Image (cartoon, rainbow, N blue to C red; front, top):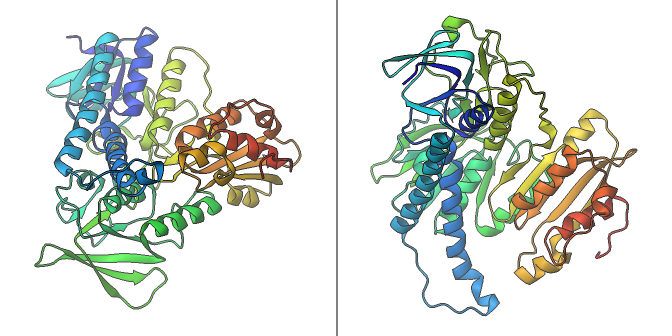
Length: 465
């Protein structure tokens, strides 16, 4: 095996493996290093994919209990089998990671298992080997769970998202620390299966950074499902109890009396931090910001020639698809092409039910920037397909420039919002106006007709409300 390559990628997650494949497609010799033997990184192994598998399984169970009868489908006693759910989740993960291994073989990418450490800007030690890159080393090592002071994660009683994906039994009371995407999704899984779920969030709202109207609508929906929210609160300590539970010390975020909250399990989901441990970046003088993220220019180059970085280790939303796009763009730049990545056109999705999806600017951001805008909204309760499906909760909201009508942001809460947002992302990518969307013929009956109607509503002329 050669120890010299055009490009070496550190990390085989959605950023790293995509960068490796695209570089190989463009004729470069590539090695990809990852500490796991299974490719795919956090997302495929202990993140995006297994969580969606459990979300799907728990949704099926909830539908069987509460929805199918309305469709005339009558079932007997409905139960669930957690070992079977976990086995299915594991198979989904395995199939995806094997798929990436196949793609690596197809594109003649050398997969190296081990922990990489820089010896020089384009020289790495890993697993007893010394690898050298002629063109670039790409750091795509992703992120790790952010710790909460005073709360030690043991993956038994106090869990990270990794532990929450592998529980053997449904906890009686699950406390989720953090009201972001990960906590709400994992809380949804275990709430559907019977857990009582309390979310403790430091801020006065859930899903910070999301359009405020969408955030409020999501919280209202989750409360109806049984979630309990304690906003403006902070967890300062956690202690295991004799009966296999956890006692949390909780205080108001702005100061006040401390109180105890008892739980069977605690999920700490307050965010993630860039993972660059043991790479030896300090010795090379690679610059980072005050949050530990690697500083890069518009071409993803660090301040050290030959070293680049993408994904969760650099600034921007920690999203798998953002990392993948950066990996593609960087590989093409290394090949001499001139691609472009519009960060305003990168969507984000919360896979609760209803789903929440957003792309572009939200109302708070537009107001802060002093941009005049128009709003068009359309509820799913007026959409024929949503009525036929029995999923009428939520709405589509389009924000357009008041002068040019150009779409500035699209925000959806409702059934299959994560799929529907692709149309909106395409609209932003091509600089479409609300009128462009309104004039586009949408198939009937589809949920996407709600996007067309919201675009019509920007001009005050929706048809079905």
